Amino acid sequence: MRKWRESLLLKMTCCLACLACFALSAAAEQQLTLKPVKMPQGGNSFVCKDIAYGPRQPGKGAAHPDVAQTYDLYLPAKIGKIPEDAPFFLYVHGGAWISGNKNWPMPLFAEMAKNGFVVASMNYALCNCDYGGVHGFADMLRDIDAMVSHLLQIAEAAGIKISKFAIGGSSAGGHLSLLYAYDGANPSVLRLDLKHTVPVACVFSDCGPSDISSPEFGVAGMDANKGAFPTWAANFGVLSGLGYNYGDFTKLVKEIARYSPVNLVSENCPPTICLYGSTGAVPTTKKFTYVAGKKRPYSDLWKMMDSGVAPPKSVGTDGIVAVQNYESLTNRLAAAKVPYAARIEQAPHCQILSRKPKTIPWLFENIRKYLK
Image (cartoon, rainbow, N blue to C red):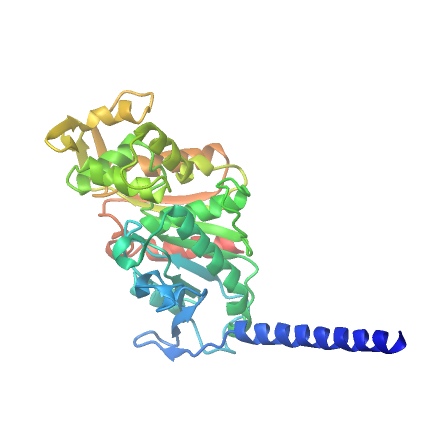
């Protein structure tokens, strides 16, 4: 009996030792080593390219680099010389949820690094079969959540503290950033079990759609794509998780309403910074292609989308997104008493920061204010 007990004790000790070795090995695998390269014309700033934040890498689950779980990291100084409290900004690129990559817009990241920010610009799952898969909003948000869980490794490797961070993006990236930030303020509202490992201090939307289930958004988006309703509906069927050629349009509208940031606004939401453009208007008498060979006026969308209001004579847009998205978001934020900073500029979609230079220091000032 004694020998049996000694043998069992020896086996248990060995097992515990193996577990400890495994834990140390796993920790070593997760340890992040940064290899910064000085940025051309970037002052004293540096960049680290193509860092993994998850297992989906080119050749390992990602058929295209643009959907790999990778990011680029922009640093204001050499590692060891970055202020511990440097503001951290996570950028989510645009591209209508079907294209784009972490290089958009690189000049902004360089400018932010020169102004003392640490910036991570990430790739994420895209709704594009050509890129090796069809992904919806849920997959995109889970990628953002995985990246946020990775921020603590960045903090350790860069010698900074990330107790909270700013998140933002342009167009589709602005929409996803708003969704992620507002979901974190209202846990499980999207029912995706996102971890939200690090809290969001503020969120920035550069022309990001805030109400994708509104007729105004439908008018602006469809008109930008030459009035093709079947394509518009099919894209949002996939993005919402209902699938291509989803027949029940009423249910589709209700599902994409779930993924409309304006419907997630509450008093708990983080401060919001938003830019929207305005370049003209689309008359609602103009027609869109409903099905092959059949056209309907845009004014019919108000009934089709069960808006409960009469259609206006025209819809203001920035060329892609309706101005109504700016108005509905800021009105809802004001009603919920959420701090916000907002500007509307006479500029095309996602070209405000490049065409209106004064908006850049305005953005930096507000991010810093809300990160304090």
